[in-house]
Length: 122
View (cartoon, rainbow, N blue to C red):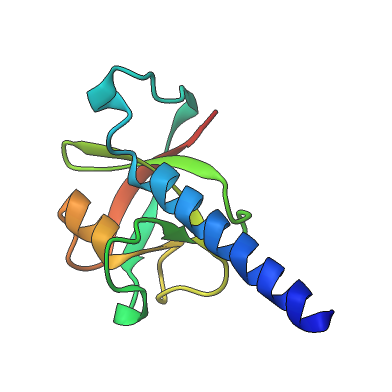
């Protein structure tokens, strides 16, 4: 019975991760003509730094010590804005509010700690 529950929880976690990655990527929706969620409120500005390589691959998202996992955000740097979400909580690099995954850093053209703009998404 315990093994079945653990398997069910693992399957649910895997499904949640897949759905989260699909939402975080922000790709595909606009290419198929679907509308992205509206940005809520003004742009806010804060420091962000790439996270370590523990989140390799295509995972795109933000780590933040305050916002809950799953919170949808628009993040922008230079001339790029990306719809993403909080995928982890906890401390990030000193002097930075957000930690960004390597894939998101690459998408935005960020190599080190920088000031980004961000806003909530509906």
